[in-house]
Length: 487
Ligand code: FRU
Image (tube, helix red, strand yellow):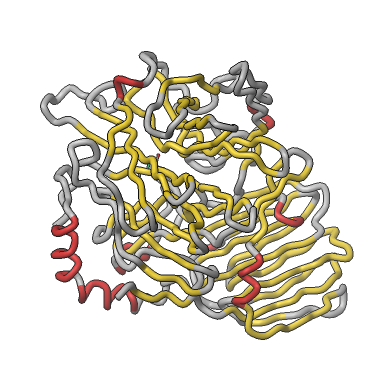
């Protein structure tokens, strides 16, 4: 079976895959399987990787441990879709089979140039020749690797671009998750990093040809903000440069930073000519999600020019759990979201294609007198408030979203497997768009200004609203994604 610190070749995987037929059948029967989210067939999934659209086809790769639901050695799994409704599970594409990535094909991204997709990822290496490594400042290698493809399915040889020795001297061994941004004829790569004083930051590298890279600059917060920044993504959105990154080790502050690790966005008017930038105070970093299970998102621009984000509906090192592990699998990707800027902040909305998942519509008007109730388990609900002083919306049996005195609170009751409550402060509650899958919720608030993404394990459907509020609710049944296999 998968040995954590051994290379894995494609042939090994194929042999083990054949041996796991009955596990796949068992996992498929799990009632907690999601209906409209991408999951691993068995095993573990984490970050979305290499997101791109190429000749019409969207490629969604992801961090994947195929047979162990608690996540061990990572390779890249691969889904494709043309419409975000029907998908093909293409099977894994990148294996930890070389000297540079033997202990994990870690996260990375795709950059389309002409007729080629260029991928950049981190090859993880752990050393075992001594027993005094701390694996922070010693005993670990983070290699930056390039592969290219003419179709998204077949890959060139792995090309080692940079090793730990190529990063600035004051870095720890933790440098990873390359993402590319182009400015004119120049290419820049951002990587997440932890320095030797355990402060999180971004390293930037420069290249003229995507093959030769040199250290360029670093982006640091005004005050230390976490010990490590993972999965950086620097991009332009509606004319504004934004940096998304995942700081680890930020202390909770009131209702903010309640998860063990964060996903934040910040305006980043980086001046590439003068290597200068301004960064807001740490208190102004936007939390991209308010739920329990959102981390390591990645964005890309599709052929329509939309900036689409897909996140990992999960988080590392949390003390809450997922009972799906007993059924041989864990975690999923979020639904894809289109991003825009409003008042200098990112807003997220489900991509338009999600509307095609709807199959039937129920419209209810609610007011002080009339309450509505339904027992749907799988639904999309669009709520528009005419007024809302306070309200309690039951999303599933025992799971509520309530609004009172400017605070919106998600309460998973007895169904969170350790997840309790999460809040967002709002001046006003105007609208909600809720996607309820069998064991997940994605709640878009006020046109996507705040989002709550979470796993939840209440198996009884219930949708009802109560309180000093009025408005309309449209409820849609949703059909499941179609997921086929590559022959
Ligand atoms: C984020 C992350 C990345 C890393 C990958 C390994 O969840 O820790 O920094 O590349 O996962 O699976």
